[in-house]
Amino acid sequence: MERRHFAHFVAVVDAGSVSGAARRLHLSQPAVSQSLRELERSLHTTLFVRGRRLTLTPAGRALIGPARQTLRGFDAARVAVEAVESMHVGRLDIAVVHGMSYDPLAPILVRFRRRFPDMSLRVLHAPFGPEGFEILRRGEAELLLTDHPAPFPRHSDVPVPIAKRMVAAFAADAPVVPQGETVTLAELMTFPLIIGLPERSASQQHFVARLAEAGLGLPHAAVATDHRELIMPLLLAGVGVAVLPEPEGELAHRLGAVVKPLDMPPLRSASIFHRQDPLSPVASAFLDVVRDV
Image 1 (tube, helix red, strand yellow):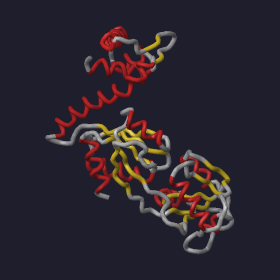
Image 2 (cartoon, helix red, strand yellow):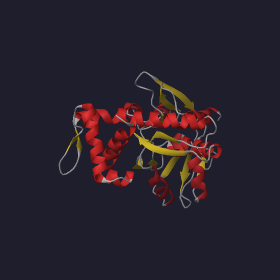
Image 3 (cartoon, one colour):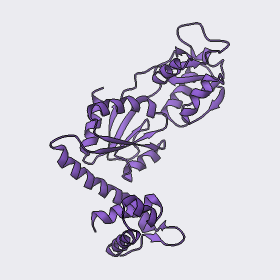
Image 4 (tube, helix red, strand yellow):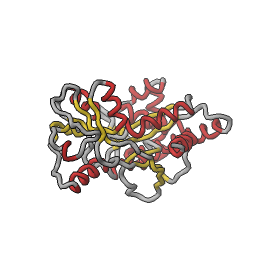
């Protein structure tokens, strides 16, 4: 088996067809088909059920994760050699759970790109909970940013500080805005809310726990959504009051919203996890940036 066999196999899986993979690889379709047959002969099994569309066999499903890991290993070896002289080449795949891409990930990406402008970054979505760690196991990403503890052994993590306060954001023409410098939870609960704290996240659990400690019930959600891009237009249109991390609150303020700090501690803590395998130079550099915060 050669590297090209794995590269062609992964390309076919990602493209959903041999023809699509051939276009991505700038190869002829017969060349990709021949490479797949060579790989199947080497493994003494079939990897695809061939019909109107290609479907992975159980053996194919078992191979896709190790194949991605193998390709990443080849890339890491190449980049490691090149990185001896300079950090001018490389790509990092990082998965992030919903709700953490803006804060805390975005500022870290900015600092990393300023320090290593030639590096490329690929940010993937990760589901909450143990399912998110499957992305690391399958080799689809090298790092995972989440607020869930590692459910499996052989994981290491680097804490990510989230020192920003939470804020309450009101539409510019809101009929009533609390007059104090901060908004209490009791005051907040008198308004219809736009809730963008994803279900099952530590953020949501912390928020609900603080409400319980204050003797308040569950919030009345005018809109509850996992789609954070939906929050700002609804807020500015006066649909409800949004609870936001401070960086997003600053953006809301620039767009005309009235923003006040929420009288509660920061909601979230997070970590960047990776398998206890040798890290690529790019991942190591990224974690150094995180530690320097």
